[in-house]
Each structure stands twice: as C-alpha cells, then as structure tokens.
Amino acid sequence: MELLRAPSLTDDVPYAYAAATGRLVFTAGACPLDAQGVVTPVGDVSGQARLVMDNLVVALAAAGCAVTDVLKTTVYVASSDRADLVAAWDVVRARFDDHDAPSTLLGVAALGYPDQLVEAEAIAVRPDPVVLAR
Image 1 (cartoon, helix red, strand yellow):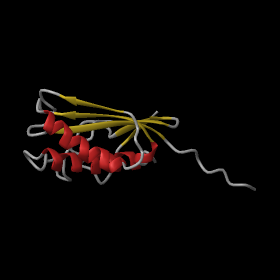
Image 2 (image 1 turned 45 degrees about the vertical axis):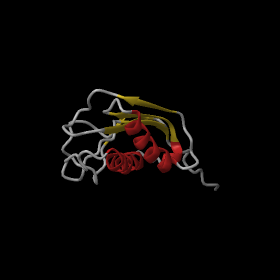
Image 3 (image 1 turned 90 degrees about the vertical axis):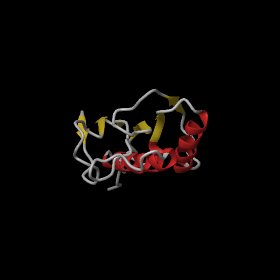
Image 4 (image 1 turned 90 degrees about the horizontal axis):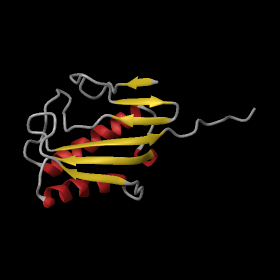
C-alpha cells in the first residue's frame, strides 16, 4: 500500500491525498483549499467545485492517474438546495468531458472545513504500465 501526497497541494492537511494498492487508487475528498490551505472562494458553489476538481486532478496525477482512469466519484455539496447540487455537478461533469464514470451526488448538512461547500472523491485504476518489446 502507498499513501500519496501531492507536493503542489497544501501540506496543511492531516491525511494523504490518495492511497494506492497495486493499480487501485482511492483519493481523499478533494476540498476547495488553495495552496495556503484556505477554503476559497467563500460562498461560491461553482467556484469551489472548480478548485475541488483542480485539486482532484492533482491528487490523481500524484497516483499516476488522470480523470479518464476514474471508475467512480462521489460529490458532496453542503446544501439542501437542488440548484446548488446542479451547479457543482455541472462543473464536475464538464471536467470529465466524455468520460462518464458513475457518480453519486449528495446534499449534506456540513463539510469538514469552515465555509466549505463542495468536496469530491474518486476511485481510479492506474493505467497498465507500458511493456517495452526487447
């Protein structure tokens, strides 16, 4: 098992950004944290979803994956307003483009950081290593 950190993401979190066992990768919930560990932009579901996806892409890359390697996502939105859930989903869906992996979208009462509105986690499979012919 490998616990993976992403050097370009804040080191101000008490957990690894991903864990891998063989080719299977599980990400922590990607949060809308900037490089200093601050939730941003406050009060903006779509803006937070964009930063969440940026951070998720970096965490996946640290594990040797891209969004096209994702098997499933779970997206959490701290809201009971369906419009907020749709706003977050539109950003997530756009980032995945044609790769329409299964996903669960949930409205929740609260998330872990003050002012946090969006979080997304993924399960991915690392691509097969390239085997060079001799």
